[in-house]
Image 1 (cartoon, helix red, strand yellow):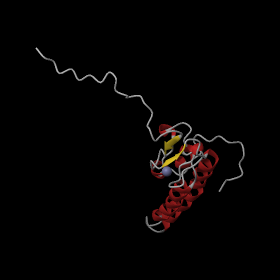
Image 2 (cartoon, helix red, strand yellow; image 1 turned 90 degrees about the horizontal axis):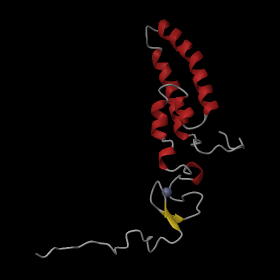
Image 3 (cartoon, protein in one colour; image 1 turned 30 degrees about the vertical axis):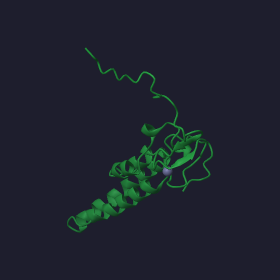
Image 4 (tube, helix red, strand yellow; image 1 turned 180 degrees about the vertical axis):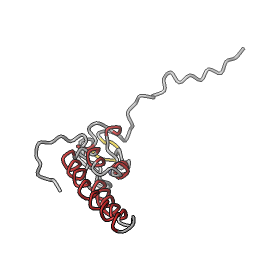
Length: 141
Ligand SMILES: [Zn+2]
């Protein structure tokens, strides 16, 4: 009996990519970068945001969704103070909207969406600090 033994025992499965050398693909867009690159020039990936690899990365979309509760998206992204400020800001805004809603037979509730939209836009635009616990607070905005 003849067996088709096609075992790839000698297959170079663990060989590093020939072209790889000291390059690495961008975790976001796959653009080939130098291994010690601090950021990608094709997208907004930066090493500080990716030191904990993909699973530790905050997503802009998730931040926006979480902003249904104002501030949660910011906290998710590591901006705890900003998150609490947005959350605290929602209280007077909420009271104002509540009063406006009473005065306008419910239409005032729409005002709260402007606040939500502002929060969501900011949560989307703010940079990810989840895995970048740097001491300098210089680049806040
Ligand atoms: Zn990239």
